[in-house]
Length: 373
Image (tube, rainbow, N blue to C red; front, side, top):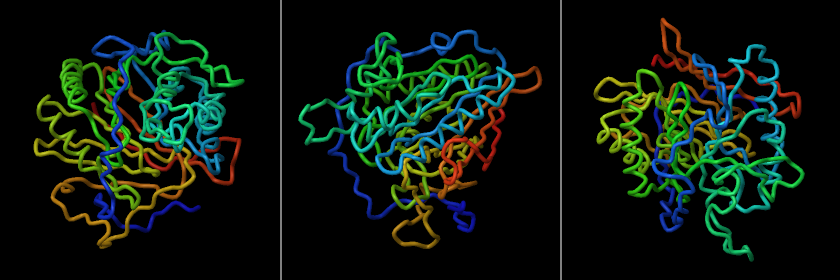
């Protein structure tokens, strides 16, 4: 599949025919850790470099059809790790932006869609839940509750073998809640849970928590970047989902109340790569990155210009520019945060994988961006 380059679209879109299915909202499970739900990366990965941190990120890796693509993406990340000679340049973890499994978050789907593909990934794995991870199959005779399996894999009280990981030696992670903050030496990564509905839903309790997390991160801003991760994309130009008005409104209100904006927003849900820059009235330019081409076979195309089914003329989409996109290849994002005496920067490199390659992990640089922190 060639990479699309001929669509001149520069604005996100809304999808006219999309149904806002708020009836799919699922109650949140109880936290397993103490408020304010922080996890220090050094508890999982000790002796981190003080001046540089690199990590891999993408979403929507699961697949029930043609799982080849998720294997290609993971192989690409593993190859880069193995070929990196300087320890400080190796990825310290993988961050998953949600939808590890399809179509429902059942235990038996985790082995073929997550444990087996990621069995050789050499670093810790963190995750937020996607809508499919949290959804429940009404025909499942075991009658699981929303997020039962996800919690056993990622939100355990102690790290121990996961009973349904089969022959893979996978131990559970200790994320303290379904929404939480990963504290690292160079960034506070605030992790939101946007539930099951198509355009996302965030509860009032989580909203209050998020505002306090933004305020806390602001106090550490000279030392740490502020990164926000959520599954549902606030801005998108694709034809399957389009932009989420709900996530736009949620983020804008929280930024205003907290009087701070993050340095980067990462999301999935849409199965492609898109990099938007939004310029706010105060002059702040905030990148919104969609990195949801992690393995699900069906990718989502970018909408054509002047298609009435995907309007882009709303003022809610003003000052948001689609800088780069890839809607015909799977891939992953690598983030590097580096601090020296002269500068403090966040660099993003997006790599695509070839559909012809299955195991060698050859990945091609498609897009790069730098944020001056």
